[in-house]
Image (cartoon, rainbow, N blue to C red; front, top):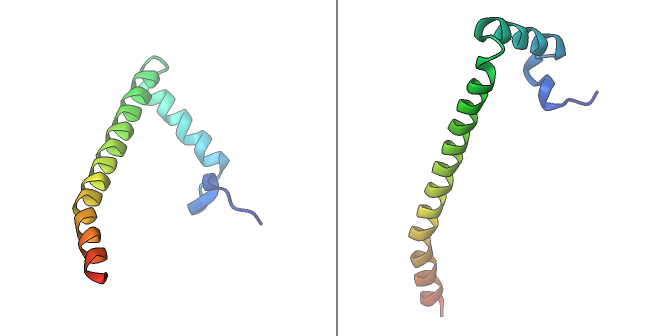
Length: 73
């Protein structure tokens, strides 16, 4: 049996549709695009933050690598 990310954790298509229906009823059709836009901005901001942290880590490690390579010679 092949598992897809949609079905991980016991969440099936029926559950996803039920959640979508509840969100539609709770927020209304006009608010959903605004909600998705806000979520998209949040995810984008999170990814940018993670990339910045990775770059800072690499900047710290690079001089250490060069020192270790120099010592090995």
